[in-house]
Amino acid sequence: MFGSKEIHKAITKYEENRKFINNERAWETAYIFYRECMSNPNSPFFIDKTELFPNVAETIEIIREANGLVFIPHVFAYGENSMKIFKELTRKYDIDGIECYYLRYTEEQTQFLLDYCKEHKLYISGGSDYHGENNKMGKLGLGEGNLNISNDIAKEWAKFVNE
Image 1 (cartoon, rainbow, N blue to C red):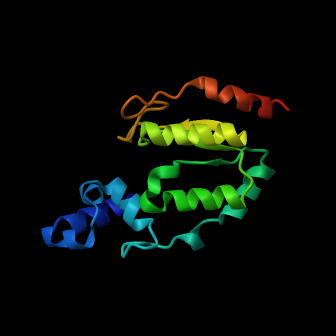
Image 2: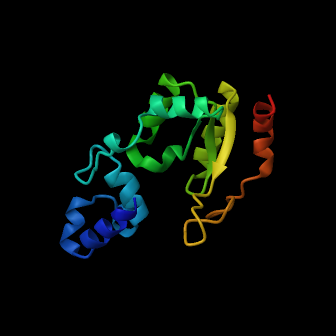
Image 3: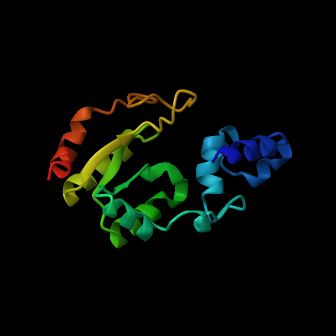
């Protein structure tokens, strides 16, 4: 993702490159460019990183071996592919919870995920994409808009940890 900032800067330096990025938000923001262009297999900017990381099944196995809980993070961060990815993950894999609160979710997206967790008896989590003091995305537990992740959502997890 960090290299994507430089790629984005180089592309957007020349106005004539707009024809390659049909999403105005991706043109304006390196983060959106990464999520919706470089992470989208249908985009000419897609970079396949599958060989660099364990696949979903391997990742879940590692988490389970460490006695951890498996959560799906930032469901709606991948633009047009978001629901396709979400449906595939929830259909194919045994997950424990979903990140229902995220700094870029709309209220409707958050509510959809909260309802989904309630219906499927899944844990709820939240994330501000905090990655340290140099990060401009958010603060620990806080983010854009009215994101304020309550410690109360982790109380249900404590039951798992204490088992």
